[in-house]
Image (cartoon, rainbow, N blue to C red):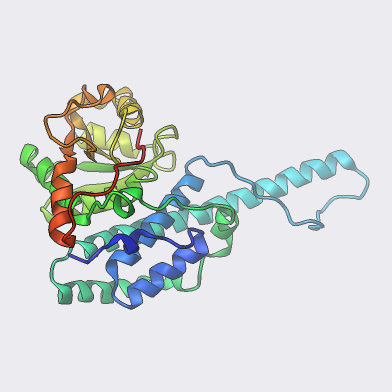
Amino acid sequence: MAEAGADTWTLPDTRASALVRRVVDAADRDDAAVAFAAAAALAQLTADRLQGARHRLRLQPGAPLAVRAGVRAVQAGQERMARGAALVRGRFGLEQWHVTVRDLTNVLAEAVLVEDREERASVLAGFRGALAPLRGGVPAPPARWLAEGRAAPSWCFSRLGLRPVDCVTLAGRFAQAHPDRDRVLLVVGLRPEGSYLAPLVAAALTALDYRHVVCRSVRADGPLLPEEPRLIESVRRIGGVALLCSGPPRTGGAIGRVAARLVTAGFAPDRVLPVYPSLARSDAARVPAPLRPFPSVVLSAEEWHAHRARTTGRGRTDALTGEAG
């Protein structure tokens, strides 16, 4: 498994252009963990813009308009039409960019979990051939949408000391309770932290021979995959399971809201599974009230602290801080 210390998750610059450079540079030097962390942040940023962030595209000052000077009403209408056309073109470009970044992130997550160093280098060698869309930086249409955006780095990995192997453990716990490898799994990360956790959990499930794993992300109070309105219904119809990946919850409110909306969309409560590392020291700790209707998959703080101590030679983590909802 690729080494992923705290520095891996420290992103000096979380703008889209800087994240693209970091992905490319890290992949070129066979650093799967750093490339993944930057790609996951970039995927978070593009998904936020695509799934409902407020858009602030403007026409360039003095842009020529095909209207007669002095006809204010016509000019205003033409400006709205031109702005609308720019938004449509830009959104289409952002959608394409989002799919590219999301798919690259998922491939990098699989590379992070590869145990053998030479095999991982081989995976990255093949991956570099798919980096062409990133080597030229952020294309113009999505760049306009992402210009003011900043991604949120992972506090679970950088501050709490979580490791990719902990996501493997979570996937293994799910597998123990749900051994059917043909069942469709919709792994949904609650942004921002789920942007990092969900691809790793999905990659671990794929490595456990689950044949139909789909990885997406949402904001707790945002729309449910508005760019793919039929996906949730398709998974529900064929008896699939939704796994909600989040950072350690304090109240459980954020995960609970997304879970409740999936139930409203037709999922049975026993097919909606919150998946998260816990701040509690024991698996016997009470589950937050909003999550009690759902069969959670939990990794106690004691367990991932123990792994951190084994891999770093340190004892318990520093103060457990942060809020996942």
